[in-house]
Image 1 (cartoon, protein in one colour):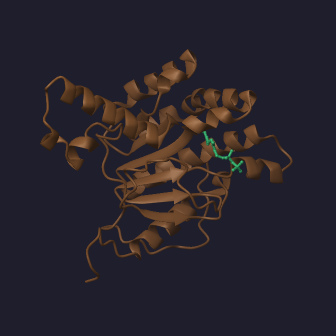
Image 2: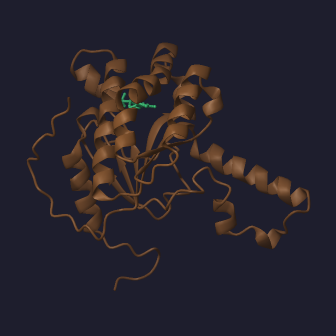
Image 3: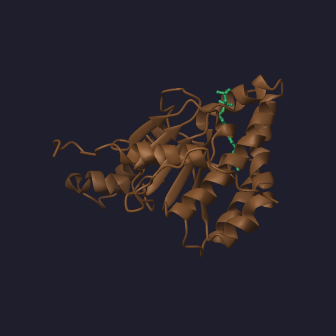
Length: 249
Ligand code: FPP
């Protein structure tokens, strides 16, 4: 049973200017756990609850897509036990929340090298994708074993191969064409990127896609990030003037 927490602060959101796609760098799980003298894995466990909370609220607000950085290609540098634990989280997450996400019309997707995950993890994620594929609400994408530079290099390889085979000419390679070879090709443009825990860097997350996104770096540790922090981020976003390289009106 989940009880909706009463918000301390009511942000007056403009419902006609809700970001279409929000990307989250879920940072601070380890510090959150350390503060409680708990193992880092406990922070990741609690962090999954935040994904559920924000997905449901983003969906309710009419956000079209939400992408979460669940595991980077660089995260393999962590202790094997932590990596193994994170690979078990999709099972826990979908066992607990898939039914509710289905009821709320949420569609699950992933970007990244899922084939590098244990077969059980792959199957759990593929099953969630398949079961939710007809849903038309929020698209919740897990960036799982994802690296932005790797994604760009991969797209470049595919395009070079097509050029080598004579399928395309050099003038075909435009920004739009390139974008069609990224893992995010079917997702709307990212409007807003939020990183929790106060760290101010991208860590190889969607470097191409975030070129014109608004950035918000929030001090809150990921397991503490809730609906109210989401509203605050959207309110800040709505207060910014996006110019896409143009001039102030
Ligand atoms: C960053 O915090 C968090 C991660 C590297 C992993 C985040 C993963 C989840 C929340 C769960 C993924 C869930 C599914 C369903 C795939 P950190 O460990 O870097 O925190 P720290 O900076 O405080 O050490």
